[in-house]
Image (tube, rainbow, N blue to C red; front, side, top):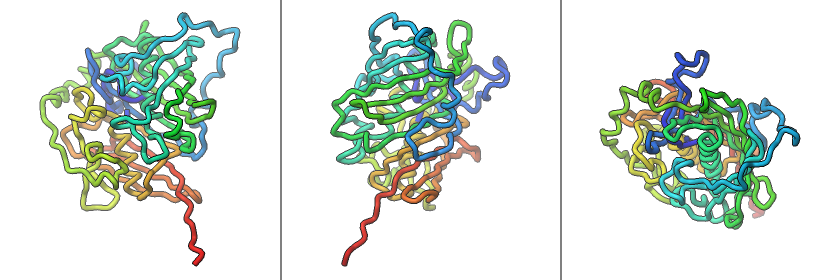
Length: 379
């Protein structure tokens, strides 16, 4: 789950109440938020990544989910379809909302229809053949917040945090030529914890198909925080909204794998494989509303751009992406992004990316892509 209406510490949502109220839960300092949504700020975060694999399969954590309910326990949806609004998805414009509608199959299972456009100001094609794999993670994030609000009782002013996010994609199925075809995806909600009549946290696991072909699988766990708890958690940082953030110069967009300079989220340093996070609080997609910290999806995008720059692969088409966040990335302090390239398997490259601020870890991510086969000259 990525951006939502409230903000915890560290994309792509909200967080659970402080541990004092729920012993044994992750500490509030470990939560990260993504976006602000009226009436309250909404955020999304990610926690430590799962083991990276090259298979289009759910991560190990998914195998711990309860078995799908038997037909006898499932009941028909109370309505045929429910339309996704930009408010439910925590976006400010309709063109940034990818899930379109959903049907309830049971109390914990849902079926969505989504549209992944051929053109988008930010989640556009990565080359003349492939759509952006990051759109899968963004769709997962949005659908998770939609269900938290509409099916599990999270109030409109809830702050969300995504503690972990793992996405497995088949790049050969994510083709620009198929963009007009709707995407169908099934959602299983597990590890559901309630707070009164509302939601404390849950995991969502999704499988995406287009024209019957498996495109991607993903999973993420999301926590919810009330506005009062969020104000208590972020009391000394809420004034960051009133302080302008200097915009650093970006690395060349071609190096970052982006067609437009305004979408670059990395700034150069004097060391190879190391960058500073470039924060543009006026970016209409990454910062659709004012926020008191860096949204998780900005950090997730920084990981993808760092992997692209470190490998020199254009396009960099990840088959696996994981991300985890340990604390908020603050707006007014340098955040150092480092990438390590690992050639662990023949024909593949994995890039481990980390972010640190004030000497403390902010997030970790890992992205795995296929290396193009080199054609040997016959001369």
